[in-house]
Each structure stands twice: as C-alpha cells, then as structure tokens.
Image 1 (cartoon, rainbow, N blue to C red):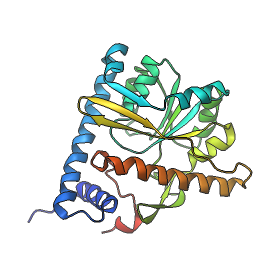
Image 2 (spheres, rainbow, N blue to C red; image 1 turned 90 degrees about the horizontal axis):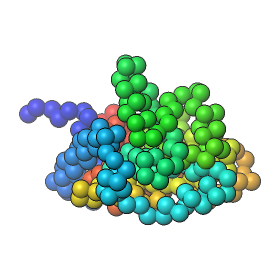
Image 3 (cartoon, rainbow, N blue to C red; image 1 turned 180 degrees about the vertical axis):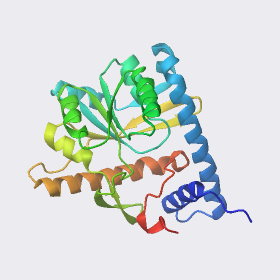
Image 4 (cartoon, helix red, strand yellow; image 1 turned 60 degrees about the horizontal axis):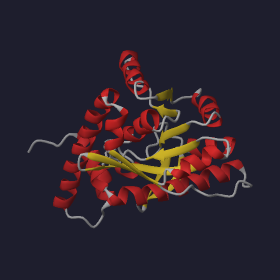
Length: 257
C-alpha cells in the first residue's frame, strides 16, 4: 500500500484531535473538506485584488463589526486573532476596500524573497500593510495599533516554538503570545475572529474581546490571555472543523507519529 503523504497525515491528526469521537470515515471527510477549503482560500486570495469594493461587499457579511468601531472610538485599533479557518483574506479585503479601515497583518516570511515580495504586493493591492514575523515585528505592530489599524494575527500555530502552554481540544500544545503582549502595550482589545465559507460567500464572526486583569504581572497576563484565545479558537473551529486547514502538526505529542 502506498504511504499517505505526511502533509495529509498531519492534517488528519489535527482534525482527529478536534473530533475525537469521529469515525475514520468521518475524519477522512473532514480532511477532504479541509483541503477543499485550503484550495478555495488560495483561489480567493489571488482573485481579491481584482474585485471591486461592491463585489467584495456583496459576497461578505460580518457579525459584531461594531466591536472594531468601538475600539477605534476609544483611540486605538483592534487586534483580530484568527485561526487558519476558511478565508481570513476576505475580512482584510472588506476592511480595506469597503470599510476603508487601515489593516496590518503579521505574516510568516516566505522563501525565496521573490515569492514573499509577490505575496506582499498581492495583499497591498486590497489594502493590507504587511509586517513580516520576527524580532522587528512587535514595534511596528504597536505603532499600527496606536495609529488605529486593525491588526490581523493568525495565532493558532506556534511557528517559533517558544509560545505559551495551552490546553487545546483536550491536549497540551503551545500558541504564540504576541497578541497578548501587543494588547498589554497598546490597550487595544483582542477580538477572536473567524471567516467561514458560506456557499459562494464568506461570513466573518467576531467574538467579544478577551478580558483579563491588566494588573497581573506581564508573564501571567500573557499566559492568561493566550489560554483564553485558545478557548475562543476551540469555539470558532468547532463550528466548521472541515474548514480548519492547518497542514502542520499542532500538538507536539502527535508530530512524531
């Protein structure tokens, strides 16, 4: 029997953790759906720069958008933390081209450089200011938030491997603490967010801001906020597990299996 590609195995293990009571056939169906969602994510991302604001608005809906407006009315931007679910680029494009809000996204720097620059130009075409992840990212993101930007952070994967310990779908893993640190430095709210595919449209669900005692020590605050973020991601992913397309291991215990 031909071995399955490891990429599919990682996705399969992730979705089996999300749905521990699912049969093998049910997990396989989720895997097929997730690969389909991942393909649609890229197809939509390539198309968005060429769509008019009217078309984007017609194919997008959002719940709790007022939470962003309230944050800006208080003098900061908002920090949207998202899992790799559905198509977050739709939210960025709608905010930039329809709502005409400044948007900044922190993204993984791809190699080679030409590929990374191409993706930067793609996202700038629909109004997204791109900040590459790394040592110099935090000061730029702090400035963006203080200037009223909506900052988008994909936060369900600990790329650097030095994140915060969390319990996620019943198993230990780590998630990046950058959103919590950014909130502590700016006073901006952290809004857990997901963008789901709904037929030929996309729907953005914004959850209420994560609330934690700002009088905590910084280390404790970052840990508490990140754990609340993980819990919010469980809620968002649980609604549409077949649209969660993380192709790398999320739980260290399963990465070697």
